[in-house]
Length: 216
Image (cartoon, rainbow, N blue to C red; front, side):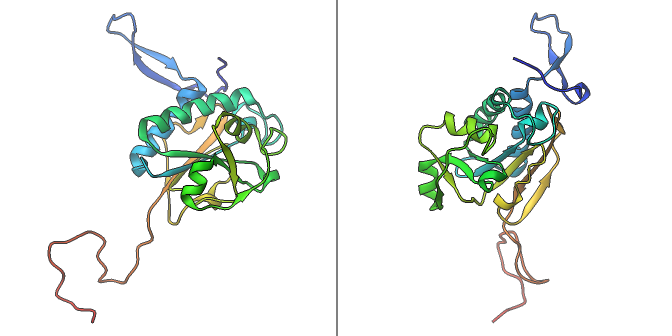
């Protein structure tokens, strides 16, 4: 498995010596491991678990050190996909994948999820040249894949600055993971919260007794 990137200072972590010597070793993480690390932190911070949708936007070109849209690679996409799927198994969220601009940034997901959410299906099969390597790899790996026109996800990870904001619920809360690059690609992430409503007397946590001021 290839290890992409020159930014090793971001990707070397302390780990116990597997020989049992008690020493702590510096280990370089694979692309899948980097992805898993970031998603674990995001899921913990945002409470992203069962019933939640997480959108993944990726430029495999950027991960491999090229400019977005110029060097997509299915091999890179498959490594990223491995990390996402492991995180999804651990936390129980449903990952969905953003295609590139050629397909209007449509979302790859399982048909069962599209029907559960009542989303609008659009017709295309993503390939690396039209949809992107990540979308193509995700589509190929799913049991019954479909494309949704859009989704309102509870959280998202953007690897390579592909812009995923159009698929996030309001209100997005930026999240800064400890690992800021996956491969050579800059990582941004966010989880979301419901909009806070009301004025100065509004309460946002359940209380045992209501306040003295009345509204009716």
